[in-house]
Amino acid sequence: MGEKRFFIFGAGYSGKAFARANEQGAPIFGTTRSPEKFEALRRAGIEPLHFDGALTPGIGDALRQTTHLIISVAPDEAGDPVLNAVGETIRAKMPSLKWIGYLSTVGVYGDHGGAWVDESADCKPVSKRSAMRVAAERDWLALGREIGKPVAILRLSGIYGPGRNALVNLEDGTARRLVKKDQVFNRIHCDDIAGALWHLADKNLGGVFNVTDDEPAPPQYVVTYAAGLMGVTPPPEIPFETAQLSPMARSFYGENKRVANAAIKAAGYSFRFPNYRVALERMWADGNWRDGEPRSPMKRS
Image 1 (tube, helix red, strand yellow):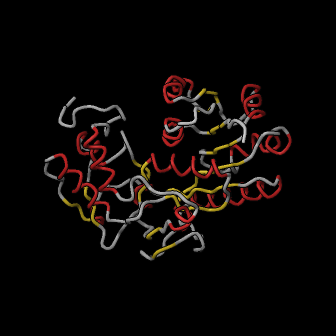
Image 2: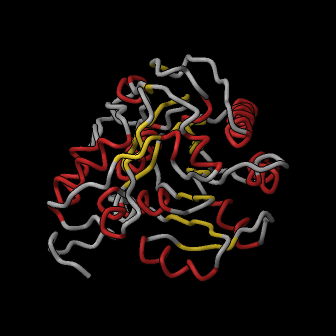
């Protein structure tokens, strides 16, 4: 098999979770646009590099040794920033490359009126950002066919985990229980994003996979459940129609679907956190819900 060497474009929340799950001790390089984040990447086990849309000698050197490439950078008006910067490098100067993983979003499906969707469903994105994702997915899959390497597209639902969850929102006073009739969302714990990436990379599996939990649920249920674990009163319910929301937040509520995850399970992956209750209970019991560092669950900082 030989040693794996990973490179993550856009080593943010999900990329750091991936690196923390590096049981193989594989070398991992990762980029950020902000040099002040270098130390946080190092703490997660990532060798940091600066990427602002241009290929640098340091990035080029790392890519030449890379066996597994992960992209977690959003496309923009000009297309996919990574493909634009290093597409030719991938084609001609990555002799060790075996596999590409692209982190996308279930937003590519758009609105399906609450119906179940799987990877065969039509992509009919509502937002411009999701339309750009559809194009980026297509471009990465085309590149994979061109160079004869497997490309895995991971369509992620709402990402949560330590530091980013309803428990944190309740503690800092930002939790809200917005109620919109029949609205549901899927979610995915960052450790399951990491687990799915490691699973697909280990097997060099390509294809399109919904990486999402088993249980699409109304968002207010999650806040209520978290409040129960904390022993606090949940915030009052707010009708969606009267809620003060940013245009982006409101756009999320314009899409309603239940996302199925049978394909990634059929590929052999088992979810650690199949629903929000299991995940919230685990984070609360472990005391690592604030930032990943275990503490007494009742301590107030």
